Length: 616
Image (cartoon, rainbow, N blue to C red):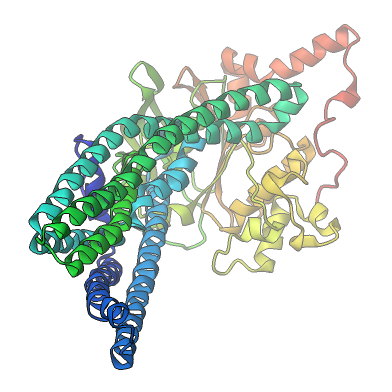
């Protein structure tokens, strides 16, 4: 990947992008440029040939009233050969240029996506999803828009140089017309690029904004619908879309003014050549062949000048798109992995935190000298008020983030020293928000992992207490669940997500409030099933409900990012007032409601899956 484009003029920065593109796909570029040069050279040759045919065949035939058949046939054959060779060059250039453009777009879409995967979660939290989608799609596409006409422009640049030499060699007076026009064309292009660049920058940013607003609205469709915010969301989207429309209209107006000027200048040059040529012919300074040749040269150069104009006209958009893509490719914060691997011996893993400190920002400390252990094969519950650092601890164990200081060890090995594959094999995180892919139940659980056959899938479903409802579905494992699992209830989605984690046979299972939408009886069966599973795992569970906490072997109680107490649920309930107050808050609220005659037992689990059987 080439280095960062310095902050120079748009033309220079744009050519840096084109040179980088040519270096990235050198063979395809040389093929396309070779075809363009062949087409350009033969186009010039056609001007010379046609001028000779008019001077030596057409004019004498009119003068004598007779057509020399041999000369006419030779002229036709030569013109046909030139046309066939020009077609060959044109096809080679177009196929090569198109292939180069699409290969570059595909390459850098993959590069951007790979970069997203390597960057930490904290980086993604700082960027809107819509902007990231725009970087990988619209910005990559914009970066390489000038690549398609670029080989043609290279070929026509050769044509222009040869044509200028030919003009001056034919007649220096007529050649001076071309020398005067081409700098004027280049000056217009520089002016256009400087005026267009800020417009294209705003348009590309607004494309990302429209994508971000649309994605946010779709993602929050449930909130939008239930809160009756359809009109407000429509107005918000319309505002951004209207801004993009106005920005693109501004781009179109400037281009609409620029393109006719660039197209008319070569035509004006041709007109000037005809006027001067007629005068030079009348004085005997040039002959008819020279006049025809110069006129043909100007007429064939009009289109190449447009090709160069296309490239220069698209450079502002290309520069803006590439610089937005480059911000992703050059983003820092990669998490480097070690070389150690933990054995896959089917044994549960032990976890230890040693004086761990972490802050999302300098003025936002989250964890302060946190130390505790998850013994091998045990279930440890993390309990604490909102904001006490529970989810941050789960992210540290699974190494979505790294601590500012201190160490997190799995089976005595610092997680930073483990390979990425070993971490993924050993640790499975079931997040707070259950995510289900738009796929079948089988596809969601197996994730195309080697060895994850239907037997493994059903075993994971049984442990997650999800085999019952899956078996009752008409298509079973082949049931399509829809985008984000819209055809499933909240509790079903959570259990599918848990089964996905269990199918990987982890040694450590982390559950970040992953059963909050599940009936307490089902939740109890899940935790019991984890202990009696064929592949037992240590469990670190973020818990809020007293019934869940009571099932854990040990409890780590957090207050303001510090471990305030560590022991069994019974011990902490009896000795730690803050803990007792927290875990009994729900029961006390129910008692107060019951005392006021407001509590209805049927209300307790209306949103849960209490009507489903707990698997044996």
